[in-house]
Length: 426
Image (tube, rainbow, N blue to C red; front, top):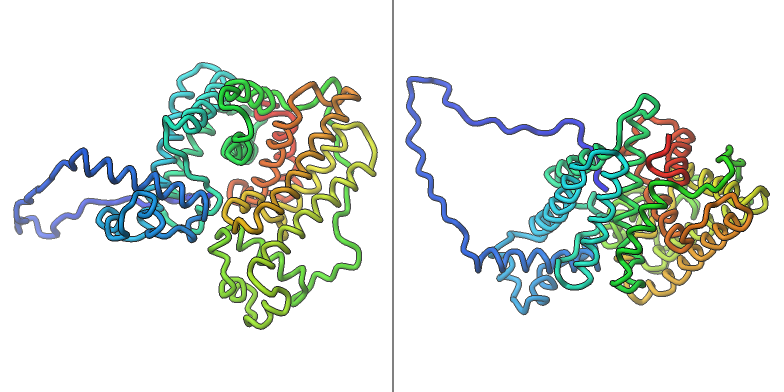
């Protein structure tokens, strides 16, 4: 997601300095675009959304966008001067569509009704997209790679509108509300990664279950107690400049911000202030680096799962310890690679990485089953809950933008509370 913008640029009309000097009369030449023009423009944006969702902002080309419509690239340039301008239009259109959903949800009276309405409207839109009645939304995985102020501003306004669905109370700080809002948005936008495995007729059923998980949380009869501290550092790992771990951390951060195509060998080498030779000392190819970054992320997650289960306690306590430990990593200097980056990696390496991610998701679901069995987790859909927890872990790496200045352990605790007890919890 984009960086929050605190100072929005304002445009001011130009005026003549000397009032005695008359400006020439403005000749307004306005021509209403034809229906054919607008239809073609919308079709190009829709094609760009599909390309961006498959290859990322930097991986999209005007040629590929044109090919989807049986056009030549100059046919696209007639409407958009370059791919950056086209990407801006695609992001702004998707943000506007989500803004409309949030505005409609805001018309409801209570906090619960507003958030529930937004979730159902969002899943309803996903159903129309799957049925072919609506165009897909852009994914926001690498929107920061665009570095466009107008897109950032539009997203911040959307964020504020969604945040306004939640009540402001004395025991909810601005930082806490921002974290809850970020979790809500991230859990819904991550739906794209897994909802396709369900029948489209089941989407209303999914909306009900997502609503229950996000609003009411997962604890059963027991209370949510403090998590146990877990040590996730690998034994004997040297974290210093020039080490493989140092290299992977920098590459992970760049891939999270810029996407697969944005994280070029040159950019990674420049970020670390090393030569390309140093890059190829650790990786034969860029794809080897991406696999290594994912391997580091999977290793950390499995260490966290094993350590949490070894620490004992009921199912809820185990999950809480796991989340707190991983979230503290995410808001610290060494975040994990966001699994949403999988959407833009080459297909030849994507399948294996998706399989290994699915193994972690299945294990999370199994841990939830343990909690249901001992009563610490209430009965719920474990497969959907595991996906929502995965979305939260992904989203935590961006909390620094929404909770600036917050201590990492406090930021992680607030976010873990929202993930486990629901976005409406007090």
